[in-house]
Image 1: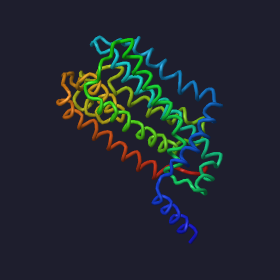
Image 2: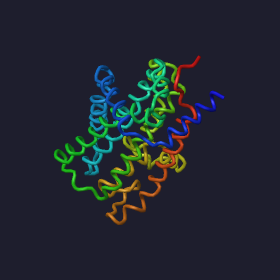
Image 3: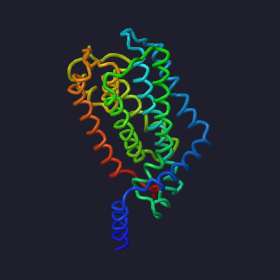
Image 4: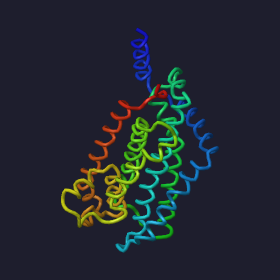
Length: 274
């Protein structure tokens, strides 16, 4: 009976809708905790920029699209490190300290708890992407995007995807220290197949299909397509011709968001294992 009442209360809370006031309050509290964690701040602010500089130096672009490559790399590393890598230990720490369980007993819905916890990381990530894009335009002469809608779609769809992947990853993360291990597959495998470090066009067809199915690849493809009109095969298209090549990356991202959302709802734990 108690479990039924609890489930009914959660359903009513979900129907009630999302409150930006409650999300904002939780987000401000999370931002204060982030400011008090020097290591998390370094991971969020410095590490993405350092990774971009390192890989762009080790594998410089020779296609004349240096500015677009910098923006795509910064966006990818920001989603991986600022959003995903920071959020996994944050959620695990709140779970192990019974914070998530206490939050669920109040007015906050499950969705509001997840959004509020992720809000500081997402805000910081978007700020870095914006500043990086402006800097790339100023330093490398990045011109007007071929299709700004695709650039926005890459960020808007990629952000909730890596938030939900972080929530799902907490299921196999017993403590904060284990996060360094459990996050490695999502950090490394999608990055290797994204096309940022090396081209996958020379690999066999099945490997190329696998690369296209990775969660980070459609984000990178949409960014290159939206910024420069360059498709994954290297063809150049204009505004009108950029929508057709964007269909598969958008559908792939949407499928990943749905799958990650299902996994997060299925496996995210709100209190420590007993």
